[in-house]
Image (cartoon, rainbow, N blue to C red):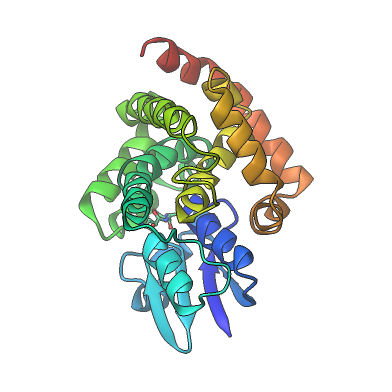
Length: 263
Ligand SMILES: N[C@@H](CCC(=O)N[C@@H](CS)C(=O)NCC(=O)O)C(=O)O
């Protein structure tokens, strides 16, 4: 049985859940409570030394890093292939996946942390909060998260994140002018990797960020109508959680819009 360590709001775990669903694979869920920093507990760090979700365990072997997990699943379980045949299309797919990992993912974190993680962490004492954040293994991530907790939406990372999102959307709009999905006429790992980053925009009610990108809007609509997305992403958000996120998003929109307008 495949096992996945995951959290409902983690876009990189959502990406893996979409792939598992597209391939019709059964799996067992281990919820890692990120706001309580269960990801930094010693027993979890043994599985994933970077202290992040997702982690896949297949036949007792741990696989980490969401893009690597996605390719692993596609190679190990070849039904419903999510990698194109053509080597150039594979190269394009990997380019998009790398862009997601290196740029879009930290940007998504910069938008989510002030609204989702910060409030809980701010309830702790300064010393307790610093002690928790000091446990984050990688320095750039540790420092970014400290800034986002300290400064919230005023952290410089937020303006950068809005810019990265916008540039990504414009590049996607162009790519989608050439084919129905991101790297061709079939849904691939590139689509599975990008789609969850729209969940973040939608959950906060920030669809205006891509309102002038009709192909992107239609693509996301197609992604979100797939059974994989419904079962692996949307189903994990209760009406109560969705309403709360929307409230938080509404309260933050003025600052996000200011960054958007200054690009
Ligand atoms: N490059 C990693 C990134 C994983 C990652 O940043 N996961 C986030 C959730 S989306 C996490 O576990 N964050 C907890 C933390 O940073 O404390 C991957 O793709 O798997």
